Each structure stands twice: as C-alpha cells, then as structure tokens.
Image (cartoon, rainbow, N blue to C red; front, top):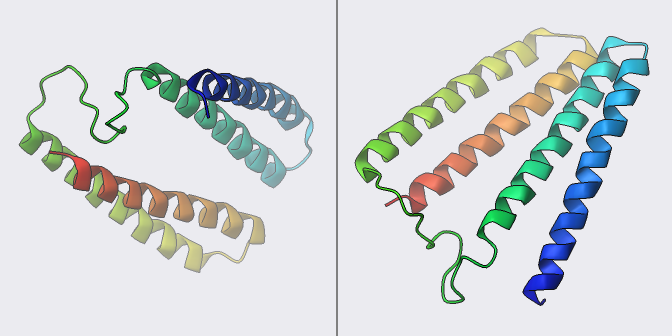
Length: 140
C-alpha cells in the first residue's frame, strides 16, 4: 500500500474511533444499571486508546527509513539501557502482582457482571505483561 493511502486509512480510523468515544459517552449517560455503565466506559476508553495509538503511529510514518522497522528506528534521545531495563522489569513485576490479585478476587465473587469485568481486567493485565516482555526483549 502506498504510504499516502495508509496515512489516509489511519486518519479515517482515528475519526471513527473519536466518533465512537463521543457516541458511547452519550449512551453511557443514559443506561440504567451499573454493569452497563461500566461496560460502556470500557468501550469508550478502548476507543480513545485506539485513537491515541493510531495518532502515535502517524508521528513515525515517513520517518522510519525503508530498511528499518519501528523496533529498529532510534529516537533521538539518550537513555541508559540498563536503567530502562530495570524500570521495565519493575513494571512487569507490578503486572504480575496485579494478575495474581485480580485472579484472587475473581475467585471470590459470584456476581456475573463483576466476574466479567474482572476477567476483562485480568485479560488486559496479561496483555500488558506480554507487551512488556516484548519491549524488554527489544530494548538495548
């Protein structure tokens, strides 16, 4: 795909995500129960997160040389790789704690809506853990 086409596609997706944020926020105000309100809040926040990720991608399109990818493209700033790795490992340890905590809480509740929300959080924490593993692997 030509870079201009890709940029156009990303911008269109950002617009869709932003529209979803606004429309879901309106629906969130109107729902009549706690679980529905929380689910809509999750959807709204995820759409905002998607728009933010795509906006971040737009920052790098055109800057990454054809022979490189996002993992090999170096930003211009000095960082001590040892310090960064230690920080990332600390984040990973916290994710592990959160996973254990949510698993424990999940086993305690009988409320199906609460179970589903906790399961969502648990799945997110596991994704974060895997992401941090990937980041650590690529951090030099």
